[in-house]
Image (cartoon, rainbow, N blue to C red):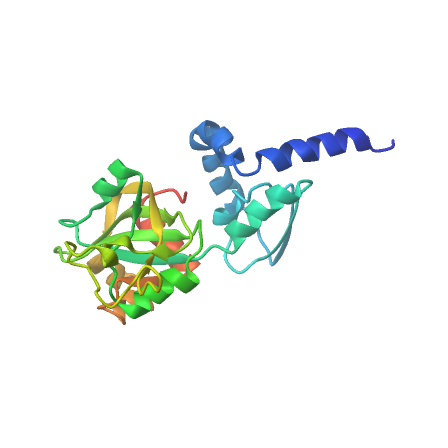
Length: 242
């Protein structure tokens, strides 16, 4: 049987057009069924090499076993671009004092600029290393005990922190200008609040988390997290990866 080239091109065109909002269309089914199925299915898969045909937007990627070599193919180039973003995803831990801005505030606001950062290393991380779609562990600091209370994701490219230009802000910087801004930020979008927050105490007792950067760079407000650490924190929280 010869392939139906006209039908193939029609299908490709449809998926290309829908690629950036495809996950939104599937969201109800993802929450009700697909997420549970993905989790169960990928626990049965062994590597080290896997070919995923019809990888789509890459929604299986968070559930892939560690240390596999995945090749994903898809009819739609635009869907494949979305999957590549997932496969290149990085993870971060971002601290916030809950009296200043909490996970509940982010849940209410939906998306919020991560402003007020006045540490050069943290600024450089937002400016140079973070990408839209990166995962964020939301960490309440200066409470007893400090605790990871949920997750968010990076929702924008870096841009100048507006508070540096505001004389009434405690983050005002008179050495910075709109022509040559010193401080950059990214927007952060709420993803989920953990029903079982993960305390720093519990993290320190978990052997697989002993190398987390947060334990070595105590004063740094933004630290990198490995994919294995990201998954372990979700496991400890009894939360699904989103």
